[in-house]
Image 1 (tube, rainbow, N blue to C red):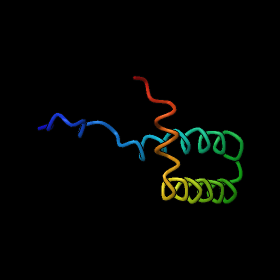
Image 2 (cartoon, rainbow, N blue to C red; image 1 turned 120 degrees about the vertical axis):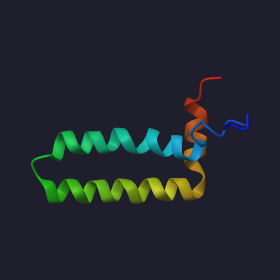
Image 3 (spheres, rainbow, N blue to C red; image 1 turned 90 degrees about the vertical axis):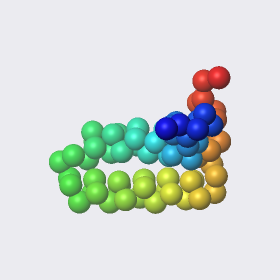
Image 4 (cartoon, rainbow, N blue to C red; image 1 turned 135 degrees about the horizontal axis):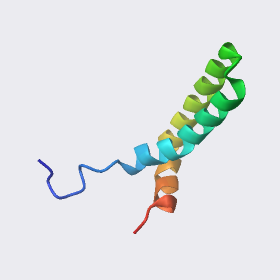
Length: 69
């Protein structure tokens, strides 16, 4: 049951992380799918970079920039 505070929506941190990480992972997959070790390394670096952005609060700002009011 939702409390009416927007609990059922994505948090800004998670939304920003998805906005950053998904296009990069898809681009890495499209370009590196035949070289699996390099692809996995690229995905690991993307996730570490996205984690850093989430830890510093940058993903919140990114989500707010793309938010529709």
